[in-house]
Image: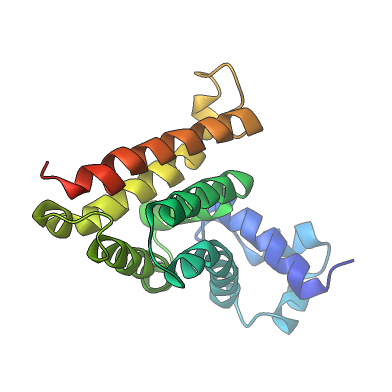
Length: 202
């Protein structure tokens, strides 16, 4: 069995993704873990500390592909690989996308952490890719933050909207077949817009 602190993080991650920070309670977490509420304070100071620990763990995991991309030249092949890996990670674990949606809509104590550890590194990495010659144009430089936000929204909203898409598609949008179609779509979009299209004026 996992250590209690790790089980608390696992359960809290699911609850925060399901309900958001405001609606999820420490009592809910303790009940699902199978411990008494006061026992949680042996591991986390309060609800906000638990939330930050959950968020930090998710960001560490999802930032790993970006760190690997930053370790070498931002070639088209490596950018495609990064995008494909990120799409699959979000489909395999939709909790980060769901948690961020709650954070954006209802608010929470994690906004600064999200901006500093997720969005700013994305912008900085895209700058490196564009400056290296993968995609250079005055428009690319001017629209850089919007380009990154647009791709981020496409990847994450696919996951958060999946329950509705189930009624539209003839396959599970989070299943293996649909995941590969989403990867193919993002790859083609990356080629057409980020890698090729941004080398020209648009």
